[in-house]
Length: 329
Image 1 (cartoon, rainbow, N blue to C red):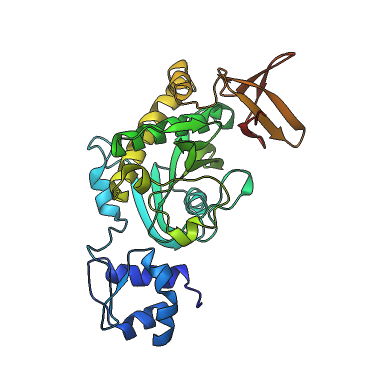
Image 2: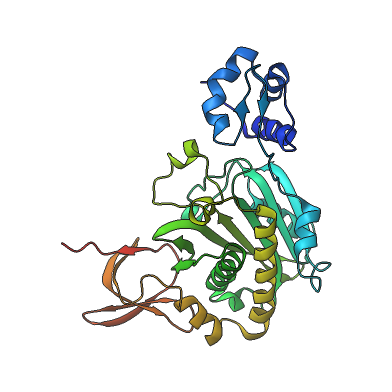
């Protein structure tokens, strides 16, 4: 089967976005294929809503809602609309990388960066993050962090609360939070968070990366090695990524304003713990130092996970730790 590059696939979907009917030779040219090779790609193209007509032409019934800078900006609350720069990119390596570059270039204001696809999307602990074209939400939000790097305690949990609240308000579903940075629906992973801190202009800046599964193409989902879910499955209908992006950006900014003033306060701690699916359940925490087994008892005032073992309670920071429910025979 011919390999479809993300750039070529996005070029095709952009042409088809308005519901346009595309002749087979034009479709092949956009994909960088010979006309007869398009046939072999139709199973993959169908995952993106592309349908082939009897004459061989391609069309997406109803069109495709691609990301739109002006629309995301217009959907933000009016009070902050002009305070946050919105960028939408096509295919990029990583939205977090673009954010870091903006800081290095001296652009220090609040900014949200989105992309239609990532070729080097990453999650926590350096893991790859599946980032198919025009399917999900890949968003990085940047804001200055008053107080420097030492003031970032609990920041990833604040981002989780903000993202969960935004998805709930936008899609009408319940979103839980697996410590320290997974968005969970029905015991399956909906999204993840990657927080990085960057120095620039003598100050610290937070780079808040969020990935949310909106509509995972079947051929991509088959290659994901953990239980996952997307918003289309959960809601039973299409989800407007522009509306979702605006909801997340707005809630992130709201929480960052409070975080700069109050830090990881008890209000946010309670909001996070109300979404903790592992609390009071037996878990296994794994790190390079080995395994720790016990009962999850929520988080402490710094955002560290508290585990109760036979010898007492232990608080562990995010670091290189992963947790799972303990399997009981």
